[in-house]
Image 1 (cartoon, rainbow, N blue to C red):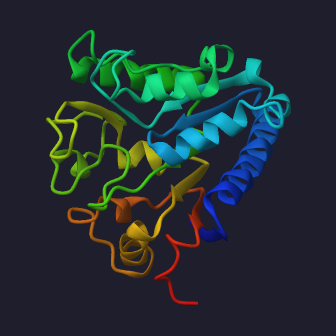
Image 2: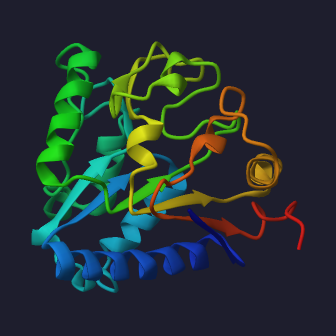
Length: 239
């Protein structure tokens, strides 16, 4: 596994830097395999990234017809629910690009069945995700892999349903497991803000402690891991 850390002065520059990397990922994947698969994350910083990707400055650099967008996780709520990652991404990307998204239909059927169906859809497109975007929660969770949850020990299934979350909103979720995330060709943590600096330092510099800090379980088996941090999020890392 190759692990790198990229630090930008502020959130806006961080988004620009990651957009550049993703444009390169997309170009290379389409040249090599004819399709680029990108797993989206929820949250305010990813929303800013998606808005930039959809902007006139960036949208033309992507061959959207040969791109498939997935989610690393989503809440088991309807597509128009305020807590839906799909709703956020659709609004940030615009309807044309959002048509490339494969949503998780966790609200219409049992979330466990939704997870199974989503895993099948992933495998129909490719054996592994090309680029996987992750966030970091205040409790050290990533995707919907929460501390002390049974999903942390899953080694067979690649997408699973979770119990009701211990963080708001208190709903069930569907999430990729470590097995799926760690199979990705490229994995990117996108973290901003000084309030995350302590967790970032623990996860990057501390021991692997999956049950207490699930993000320490992100360790690509045959791929790259890059942390994209702004100055605040990186402020407690040693030089």
